[in-house]
Image (cartoon, rainbow, N blue to C red; front, side):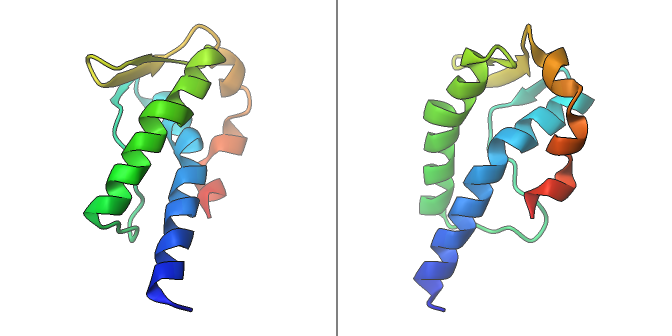
Length: 101
C-alpha cells in the first residue's frame, strides 16, 4: 500500500471518529477545546491536520450543534455540552474510545 493511500486512510479514520471523540471527551469535561482529538500513535502532517481542523469546524461540530448535542463557540474555539447532551449520554457505550478502531 502506498504512503499516500495510508495517509488517506488515516485521515478518513480520524475524521470518522471525531464526533464520537468529542462526545466522549464531553462526558468527562463540560467544555473542551475545538481541536481535533488524536489518539496515541495517530500522526498527521501539517496538511492533514489542517484538513481535519477544517472538517471538524465546518462540518462535524456544526452537525452536532444542529442536533443540540453540543454548543460550538467559534470565537472562543470551545465545545460545550448542548441542551440534548444527556440524550447522547444514554448511549455512552457507543461513543466509548474502543469504537474508534
